[in-house]
Image (cartoon, rainbow, N blue to C red; front, side):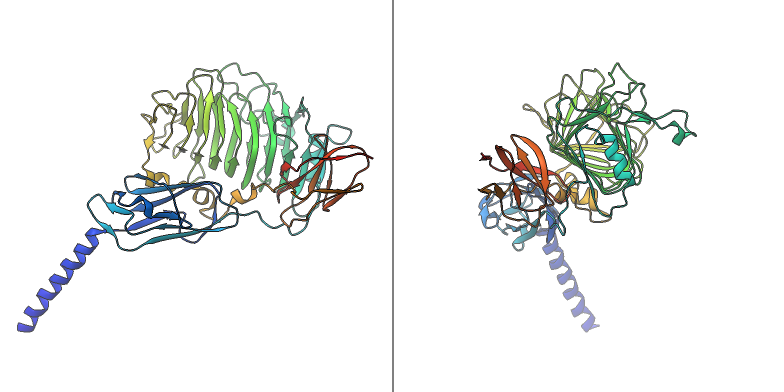
Length: 507
């Protein structure tokens, strides 16, 4: 019994000490990015989530690559913004143990280091020229380009290049009624893409467009371009897609892109219509630096879709609703990050279409004013709808809706590109939107234009007097007529970066 009496006090003392240590330690629970992340975007936030509410103790003890950086605190979360990191480089965020203290005076036991590597352009294994050039001459229309893509036996990516044309390309529409005999409607789409790994590249975002005017309204019968369920891994850049059917009130549904496929990417694309402008169906998609114009439910459908730095422009209609998510086949839903809402009057963030709807607005600039209700009533009963927002601002205030959930910083930090689009297969689409830099060493030797080769360039576009005139996979080009020449480089998906300096050539 004496030995038992000696052991028991020791046990209770040990338990008490361990309990005291645990209760007074400030512990990092989660970080975004996680330590050793290899695909971090070159601009964004680093979020560190702790087990307790925190406050600054020594702000000069927070360093990115050894240099002091400013951060902010939202309850349990430390947020470090960063900009313009070089692609494909290694970085480390260091939070020294004296940088933070818990609001209950708890302390960090040791320095925290978060290592990450920024995304970089994939290396091009074999250069290739565009497969089809659209300029509206005989045999070179947009619909013929889509037919060529659908019918090709080529392996690998099929690239369609659309030359700029101020008036755009009216692609008309085709009656697909025979293919949809079981439906009550007769779809009259502009074109249906059925092949995977197709890129559609415009020469100039402001002066390159495809369009048609629907003859009747309907969400499943009006799209300018349909991506069928087999048209996965689609890429589009620097082009506008317009449905020019006039909007005269609900319902006037006129779709630009109807998306049934997955793993699609849009870079600097404009979609312009009234109601149901962009229609997603069970997709996983990434949009960056895009514009979507509309009125009612103009981003609608299902799937996980991430909108980065995208402009949502709402037209003149008193019941404008930005979104209508239906909650099917998704984990995160529609996520808008660092987007902008602008337009002619007030708006609703959106409304649930079916149950399990998920829509999130993060760090969004509200140049138009949301209605006080914030989220409109559901189209169908949706008690499980998740309508969320964090840090959406205008120049005067931060708006939180009545119906939507105001996320905490730690809850908002979960909505990263890596989580939303790569949670089940590690898809990292942001690396494919990186633009190849223009050649900086362009020289003229006689009538030969030359520049340095680059293993991240798929092809080069030759520009004469401001217009793309030809393409090459060589880092040289033979000039045959006088003019001002420059060169643009294409990334792995075929999208063109900015032009090099101009070189004047006189014969």
